[in-house]
Image 1: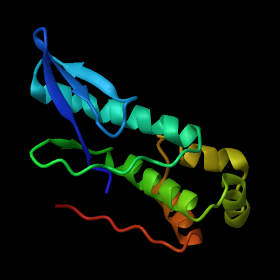
Image 2 (image 1 turned 90 degrees about the horizontal axis):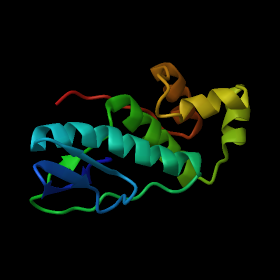
Image 3 (image 1 turned 180 degrees about the vertical axis):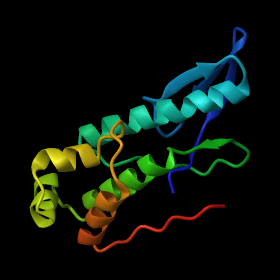
Length: 137
């Protein structure tokens, strides 16, 4: 769902990572494996800027032959719930009211650096008329 292609460019003995769809996400590593590992954090950090600014998340491009990077599972769920909230035009205050929560609880729910509980994300998804499915593959 949030598989973003990355460009890996040799850069003076290291590997530079950029995201065609997310110009804010830039990182590097000493080799390709390390660069891709760091790319997850860069992606999550850049996407948190979109959430904090209440902007729509960029759609991932499909670039054949390029590696992709996705956020960790919990952050992916948070981003999915956020994206659906935005799609429906619902504000965080309205989501908080429907959940019976205080505004800071909803803010933490979408904070990619906060370890939200899955049951809270499920409750928010249900309010939006959605459910969360988890699979291992």
